[in-house]
Length: 382
Image 1 (cartoon, rainbow, N blue to C red):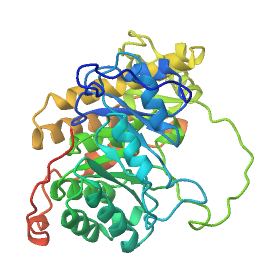
Image 2 (cartoon, rainbow, N blue to C red; image 1 turned 180 degrees about the vertical axis):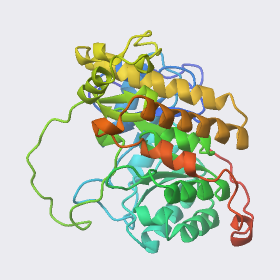
Image 3 (cartoon, rainbow, N blue to C red; image 1 turned 180 degrees about the horizontal axis):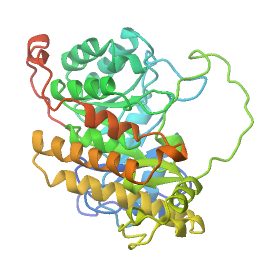
């Protein structure tokens, strides 16, 4: 995709055709060099693509050479790696301008990392985003404490700057696998003008259920996790031996990601329990053993379809208590399937996001309105 010429522009207006609005969408996050066949899995209503890495804008141009109307976003991901950049770093003007030239909105900032208690970095990103224009969304790569002990400060700063934000949640495993993290996210969603979620797993569905503007789920494990760095930001990179990562899929009955071979083994150990039947557009009522010999594209198609079907069901519910209750019911169902399929005896952990969301109180935080002043809603980029 990197060498593709610029997309054709509308000859009448001289501008690129307008893409569909991103609000309410569950996007699929992919690497900038991902094959077009994978990208096309997200070419459906209520979805779209987030390209990741330095080549993201070029990848967007390549896709726009084809008939495409779904949302397209670009995440630079300067915040990752052992030499991750601190959030005080200035945005690259060329990165923001490149997204505007590609005709995408919202424009995502090329933010650095916001470490534990680093209010200076948080304010630097929010200030730069607010100054960059109303079409800009501030990417906030956050240490996990920001949704726990420091969430009052996070909410106060986000509301004060009135900039739309897209969170990237750092955690060794799953950032929303605790009820405290779920409470922190929902409190932010209910008090900030516009919040989205990048680089998520099942948490992307949870975010949409609780009021996120949009969410992105990584098609690869590396794009739906943000583990803590082994070294401090700015330090020299450590050399590590590279090992291929086994492909993961959504284990549909229990609403969690797992390796294909692990899912197939669990199905066999369950005595071919019909609870494993999947009715996505890829499986067509089959059980997961066929995925052991399926192509990587077929496995991705299963995962994307399962996720997007759940997202569509959530969108059919009225935002607020009705949608939240529908999500909790889905989480309770996943926990029930976990028990019925005997996965605990096979060494599977309970689905963390489902367990945390099912345990979360459906009531609003009692002191939220007292702690934070009412804010003026900023116009949210489409």
